[in-house]
Image 1 (cartoon, one colour):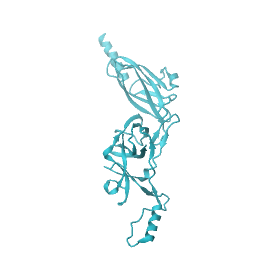
Image 2: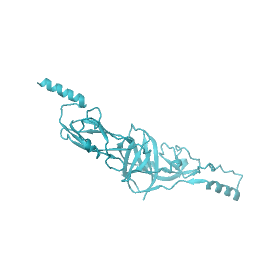
Image 3: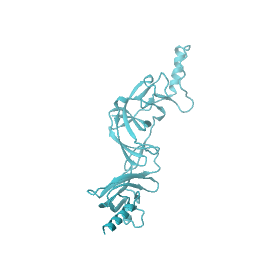
Image 4: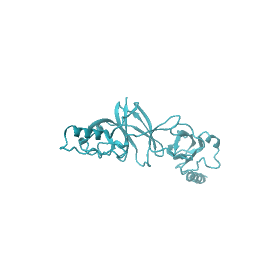
Length: 291
């Protein structure tokens, strides 16, 4: 009898992907839009390498799926990879764990439209709002200095060029007039976007992240390019806006769904450069000011 019980248990483990004859419980929850927080009708939810899936013919809670709610009963305690998706939505992957002391679990899974482009967003009842990165053409590639912005950039209509080096032979009013004319064709760095101190945004990465995404904010200070020789894209006598790397503040990064992260934290007052990085490489920077 004992041998028969062990055989039955082993068969159940193979089918359900768990590692012991343990207590069972219920795993249930809602599938919601990441940006609105509202439940999504008829999502698909499944637990990887198990028999639990809302697509199973015998799944008995299909009516509740119309409200975005899923439910799996008699789930052996253990650690599982849960996935959620829906047509024209980017799926999510989450690892969940139940124990004999807490065999039941209630959770929320988030997915989002596959029409969302990479970038920074705020959420709300009406959906995502993209925070445009209007400083991107002024940004330069930096290493130890993290980030830098040119104070001015040639207009993009093809008529403006980088100011030529000064000709020592041309002096007086004529030279000054020409210099002024060239300067007029330069577009200044846009003012930083005003934000409040409590940051809560979403960052959509352009590609899959296999290593942690990091978010950090630095005070933005004006300085000479000569002090930031690791920043490429400047002229030698220029000044720029740079990150003060000695006063960085780490921000919280929470996985929401595939390539989507929620960024939260307290921003120091003043002008800030927010950097998103991976593997030590900058993915994107934004120029904000906290009043």
